Length: 261
Length: 278
Image 1 (cartoon, rainbow over the protein chains, first blue to last red):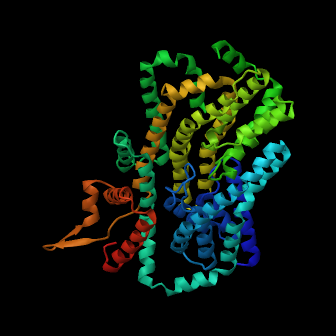
Image 2 (cartoon, chains in turn blue, green):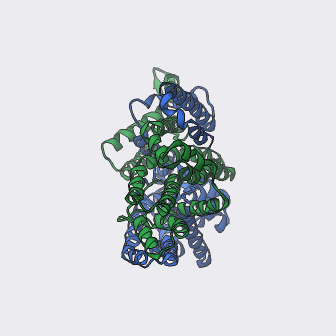
Image 3 (tube, helix red, strand yellow):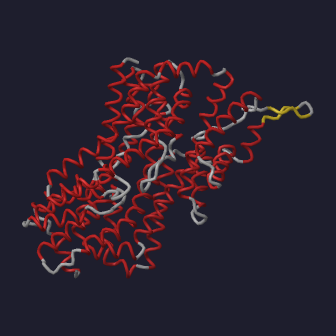
C-alpha cells in the first residue's frame, strides 16, 4: 500500500465517520459499506465486498445505544481488510486483525466524547453572548475535529503497519491458520448472542423460534421472514387496539401515518 | 391545548413555517454528532433550534435566554429527534406570542419525551430495521455482490428518512398533548413490542443461516459408518449453530465479555482442526 492510498483511505473513512453522525446514522459507517470502499481504493473490490459481509456479521451485535462504548467495528474492519488485501491474504487475516483493533479502538470513542465535553464552557459563553453564528461554527467543528487522533493512528497503521502485520501472519503455523479460518464461521454466533441479550424476554422468545423454524424447515429467505414478522406485528397491534379503541380514537390517524412510514 | 387548535395547526403549516421546519429537520439529524458526557446532545439541540429562535424572538435577551434554555442535557435516538425538536418549535412559537407562557415547560416536555422516543427508536431502527437491512445485505455481499451494500442502504434509509422528515412536521403539528397521550396510553409501547418481535424473528433466522457450524466426523460402529452431521440434521436442522448461539448467549448473561468469547471460539477452531472434529 502506498502512502497515497493510505492517505485516501484515511480521508474517506474520516468523511464517512463524520457523515454518519451528521446525517442521523444512515448506517454507512459499517463494515458492510466501508470494506468494499477500501477494496475499491486498493484495487480489489471483490475481496472488499466479501470481507465486508464476514466482518459485518461478526460485529452485528456491536452498537452504541445511549452513549455506551462499543468496539470500534469500523476501525478494525478498515485496517483488517486493508492488511488482508495488501498482503494478498484471505478474509481470515482481515478477521485476525479486525477483532483486537476494534476492541482497542473503543478507546478513541471515549477520548472523542471527553474532548467534545471540553468545549462546553466555550459553548456556554457563546450562548451568553447570543452568538448564533459562533454556535453553528463550533457545532460543525466539534462534529469532525475530535476524530483527529483516531485518524492519525489509522493513517500510521495503514502506511507503516503492513510489514509488522506480515511478520505476525508469517509466524502463525498452518494449523492455527486453518483453525482461525474455521472460527470465522463460528464468530457470528457472538454477534447474534449480543443482539439476543438486548432483545430477549420470556414472553417474546417464541418469535425467535418462529424465525428458526421458518428458515430451517421452510427455507425461506431472510427478507421474507422479516415480512412475515411485520404482518404478524400489525395483526397483533390491531387486535390489542380493539381493546383500547376508545382511548386511541382521537389519535388514530397519526398512528396510521407512522405505519405508512 | 384544545383539539380544535391542534387540528388548525396540523393543516395550517404555511410556506414560511415549512421552510423553517425543513431547516430544523436538517439540523435535527446532527443531534448526536457533538455528543459528550456532560450535556450529551445539548449542543446539537441548540443548533437545531437556532432557526426557530431567530425567527420567533426579536429581542437579544430573549434569544440568549432561549439558546441557554436548549443547551441542557438531552439524549434520544437522532432518527426520532424530529418529533421532539418539532414540538419544541411549536412551543417556542407559543412562548414568543404569549408572555405568560411557562418557558420551563419547554425543557420539561423535552426531558419527559426523550426516554420514550429513544426506546421506540432504538427498538425499531437499531434493534429491528438495522438487523433486517444488514442481514439482507450480508447474505448478498457474502456471495460477492455489490447489490448487498445498496439494498442495505435502501432498506434502512427509506423508512428512516421518512420518519426523520415527517417526524419534525408531526411534532410541530400535533403539539404536546398528543405526544404525551401517545407515550402514556401504550401506543408507543405497542409499536416497540411489534418491532422487537420482528427483530427477534430475524435474529432467529440469522442464527440458522449465518452461523455455519457442522462436523465432518464419521463414527465407525461395528463396521457400519455413521455420519454424525446426518444424525444431527435428523434431530433438528441447524442444531449446532443454535446450540452455539445459545451457549454464547448464556455466557454473555454470566457477564463474560464478548471479546473473551470470540478468543475462545478462535481457540476452539484451532483445537477442533487439530483433533479433526471440524
